[in-house]
Every structure is written in structure tokens, then in C-alpha cells.
Length: 242
Image (cartoon, rainbow, N blue to C red; front, side, top):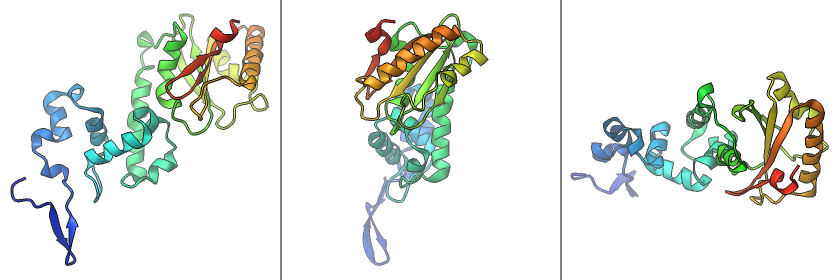
């Protein structure tokens, strides 16, 4: 740090000095560490700092990244966070929020990019791992439809129905239409409980039973319905055993 002081004079008053990235030794700066050691050597905070690029007058970019991860409960929380809410966070704004959301979305799409590397569902836990990071932290209910091929590999994920998911808005034809259009023989649906408690409601059970029956008529199997909570999930296939 040399002779750098931790207090600075501003308009005749002594203000607290905040360490910037440039004050740090080059060997400790996230970008330089990535170039020297590779991305796998960096912490999540450091990688996020590189995406954000700059900090604020109050915090350097590493501190900003750390605060965001704590505030939103990790990358999953940031993935599921509302765009407008993120834009209002001090130090973000629309440009940084766009950078952040784009980076997270690229990571999600990487899982589905190559047909030979498609994510395969062999158990409820497999499906939960795929969606948990984002769905667990959504502040509203959503239903996601996982379209599966004959090997139970994920072809695509359709996101539908923001808001309360109930039988009055959920139409079986709309749920199965994406699979029919893509010639997918089966689907798996997931929806979240923003409360964090994945215990199925009577409405959840009724909807599931309706969709199971509709799938049989449409010759498109519903292989499971997962309810996602905070780091927990419930498989209605295991509960109802259809």
C-alpha cells in the first residue's frame, strides 16, 4: 500500500478511504489471477467481480460482488432475482445487471447446448439439481416444463405462468403443446413455492392428477411434477405413484 492513507480529505472533512482494486497487489486482483492461474482457481466472489468490472464509491468490485452474493443467497438467488430489483441495487444499474444476467444465462444454456451432452433425468434429484439454483429464489410462482427425448434427456425448458399456479390458469393443452410441437414423448414439470416450503397443496395434487390424465390422452407422458422450495423439493410422482 506504500504511503496510501486510509483517510482522505474531502471538502475540508476527513472521509473514510476505501481500498480500490488498483490499490491491491496485481497478484491479488481477480482478472490478473484468472489470466495467471485460470478461472477454476478463482472464488465465486472473484469471478462475479470480473463480470461486474467496477465497484462503487463505497465498495470496490470484490466487496460489491460479495455483498450481492450474501444479499441474494448465492448465484441461484441472483439468477432468479427480478431484473428491476437488481437494477435498483446500489452499484449495479441496468448495464451491470444486463452483464450479470447474461453471464448467468450463458452458464445455464451451456448445460443444454450440445445434443450429445444433454442433461439426462434419471431421478427426481436429477431434475431438482437442474432447476433448483434458479427456482428456489424466485419471489413469485412459476411453472417450468422440461421437454424430454426418448432417453429422458432435456431438449428444452419452457418457462410459463408467472404468478399463482392453479387450475384456473393452468391449461393442459398449453402445458403439453411445446412437447407435441417438438415431438417429445414426455415432459417433467416443476413449480416453486416462494415461501420455501415445498409441501404440496390440495390444488397442486389436483393439478397433477389432471395433467397425468391429459398426458395419457395426448400420448405424452408426465413423468413427474416437482415442487421446489428453498434447497428442498417434493416429487409428486413419488407421493402419488401414478
